[in-house]
Amino acid sequence: MKTFFILLVGFISLNFVIASNQNQNNDNKNATRIMKRNIYCDLSNLQVTELVEYKYDGEQVFRIGSGITARDVLNHIVNGYPRISYQSIYMTPLMSVDGRISQPVMSVIGAEAGELLFGMNIFEKITGIQLTEMQVASLLSDYVLTLNRPKFNFQIDSFVLENLCRTLKFCMPENRLDNPSPQLISTLRKELIKPENQGCAHFSHLIKNSELFQTRKGLTETFIVSFFNLLWQVPLNRIGRGGMRIIQSKLNLIIFEGAHLERGLVHIKTSDCSPHYIPMMVPEIGKMSLFLQYDDVARFIRLEMIDFLTDAAAKWSIPTNGFSGAFQLMEDISLKQYQTAIQLDQGKTPTFSINWPASCCGMMSEEKQ
Image 1 (cartoon, rainbow, N blue to C red):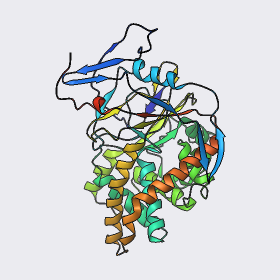
Image 2 (cartoon, rainbow, N blue to C red):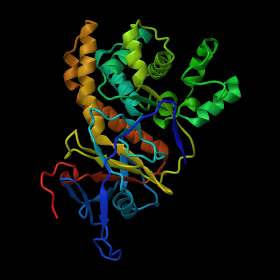
Image 3 (cartoon, rainbow, N blue to C red):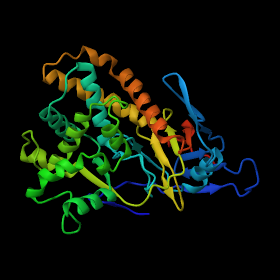
Image 4 (cartoon, helix red, strand yellow):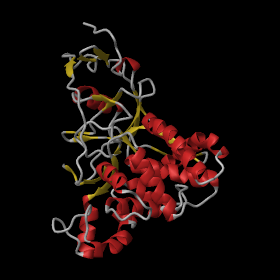
């Protein structure tokens, strides 16, 4: 399985030394120490919890089917992750929840693009105003310009390129999606908002099931078009040359290829870690791959997002008093969207949760022997 990038995302990795317990038949076979300089981590008490059932609108939807177990997930994380890297939320590009990545990630639903679209959705619900194409374009460019993280990631899939080649004769390598010929831009805009041309299942859901996901379909479509307009340097809003150079250095169109072979979804809870020391894990190692969803990272990003959206409303002379309840609204809608996705999945994906221990957040001041 390969992952390739139109614009390369770089991750700075710390090379941890993994010392595993040699007694594989012992109950504590997953006891692992990670030592690097002054960092000591004992994962023997790491707990993986299988989320057995979900409720939707008060009714049980289904029980997750058989598949991998919590023990499988624990073994995968403890014994197979010598490349754990502790990085800062402020400076690490956010990836989409995808198991076809063989490097450490900090992943949320839809990557950075998905979080910004979610924020725009909350903006509309709080203000009661439908964002115009110009406002969506302005929010996108302003957000990318002020973003501390070095890249703003947007994911598509290689099958999207195959669709474009088949329907439009827009084929690589003769054509590049990050730099198409001007005469094809209008047609590409229409194709790239179709649900079958979304590289991220979340964006596809938002278009096909907009009411279930409580997101206006037109907002999702406008957001996608605005991203590609900005990537192609033809935004609706006026941006100076200096600003456009900064934006172009941050926009990152990522194209994944290969079938989804993920064995399960793992919610990574990192509330005990500093935002400067988030454990980044590798989704795919060998034949085993997992969806890794960093729930607390998403919450942190949304708290930042509220400040950004409040400032935008004030700039447009829109009352901002409703934003005091924005975070709780985000929590509520995010949970509803997740439950809807679980329902649509029909129990095919075993789901687990891990609370990453505070002692393993890279903050120990004394090295233990």
